[in-house]
Image (cartoon, helix red, strand yellow):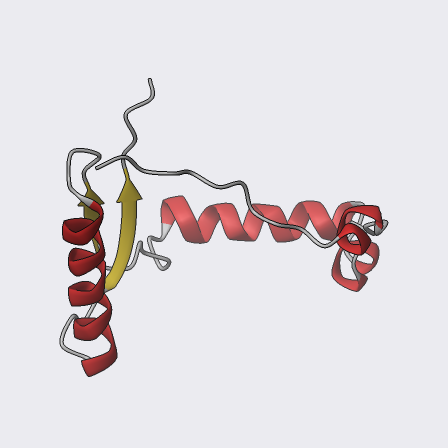
Length: 99
C-alpha cells in the first residue's frame, strides 16, 4: 500500500506575519543579568543535577508498517496516555523510506 505524504497547509496570512523574536523576558534580561541567568541554568543542568530529563519512551513507527498497522500503534499509545497508564512522556519517531 503506498503512502501519500502531504505538505502542511498554511493559511496565507500566517506566512506573511512578521515575527517578533524579542520577548519581555529577553528585553529585561540582557547584559550582565542575562549572563548570570545563563550561568545559573548551566549550574542547574550540569553541576547540581537538579534538572533531570523526564522519564520517556520512544515509540517508533516503522516505514515498513502498513497505514493500518501504524495507525493502530498510534491509537494504542494515545489510548494508554489518555487512561494514564503510561506514566512517562512518549516520543513518536516516524521513520521514512527516504534516506
